[in-house]
Amino acid sequence: MRPTLYPLRSLIDLLERETVASMPQLMAALGTSTRRTVVRKLALVPHLTSYSHARRYYALPAAARFDQHGLWSFQGVRFSAHGTLRATAESLVRSAHAGHFVPELEALLHVPCGDALRHLVHGDRLSREKLDGRFLYCAPQAQRRQRQILARRALAAARPLPGDDSPGPDIAAARELFVDLLDERQRRLFAGLTSLERGHGGDRQAAALTGLHPSTVARGRRELLAGDVPRDRVRRPGGGRHRVEKKTLH
Image (cartoon, rainbow, N blue to C red):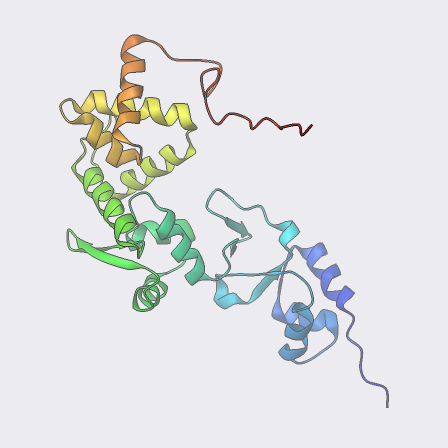
């Protein structure tokens, strides 16, 4: 008796046609009644598994349109370039300028993530610090964690910018996202403007808010005060890393 064949091409065709497919759809495409057969076939082709909906949806990497956080949503099904929910939460917390409170992270991921964060802390992949009665999740490395905590405290202590009714966690998260979207020159000038608004000690406060070195903040402040701002390029001519000239052997 000849063994039943389950052509891999039928799975690929379904995912290319539907963009995202559920396990029952994949089983139907293969003509099998067992999940194991689908899982075995999926192992042969690169694919994405949703971190939402209990990991029940699948897609091809070529279909994904990841945002700056490595996240992608298709008809409410959510995928991550980092893989699982735990891996995604870990990456977002580690890279966050001021760590993350649970509501901030859940606003990004659109799924509950408290359990994932607790597992990451218990596995020493993240750390947490209690601030104002809430847990701030941070990177596990002591130096990086301390920088995130200081940045969060600076955000909490900072005066609201014009139009801010209150410097709550949503505004702090939005401000952090805004800074991340700026290029090198824009970030330096924004930090310099923030320093000017803060007055005495502004360079230090703006450095904590933006993650820049205080000397970089001071440079941005001086450029604004002098009106000496290059308008057509990020770096001045000759700025940045110089090219390495090839040496000719004779």
